[in-house]
Image (cartoon, rainbow, N blue to C red; front, side, top):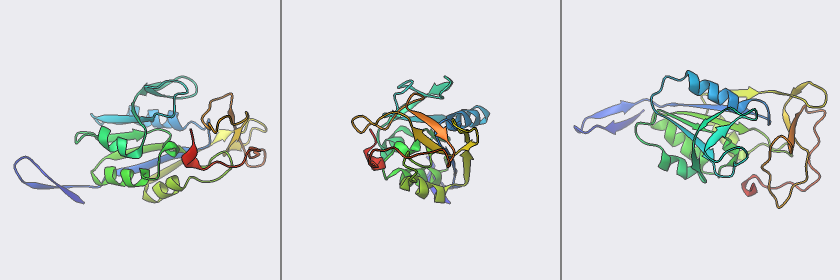
Length: 202
């Protein structure tokens, strides 16, 4: 436990918060699951974070592929999340965690140590089937890990991989339903382009 100093100089213990990771391939319902958790949460102060790279449906709201969403504030780097968080913030919800830099695990740990409940949605693998190192680190910190499954667009079996359907232009890996579809491990094929490091995602 950490300790905070109140205005009267009295030290009060702060219990460590929690870290929940909601992961899976694209179109597996990760953001939908996040929104459901936020709707059920009784916290009075919830901060929702959207990466500046993700402008597919809205720049000011996190959005599901079928149009549901909620208001969010933007962050370009993991440290920006700390700057957006106040002492009164009880829940920090981070959408598309794989977009962030290598400091995200440290930031998540700091938030949890400050007593916050941290929810993160993320791809667990990139389109070449490689795990994201920062997500592997966060998984080790997590209190709970939920793995979402999609439906393979080819055979209908549980989908665990993200299939790129369109060419990668200017190293831009962000896309929507026209660019990606869920596949099972049997039907999935890696893109013909050479793999791009996750920290180069545009």
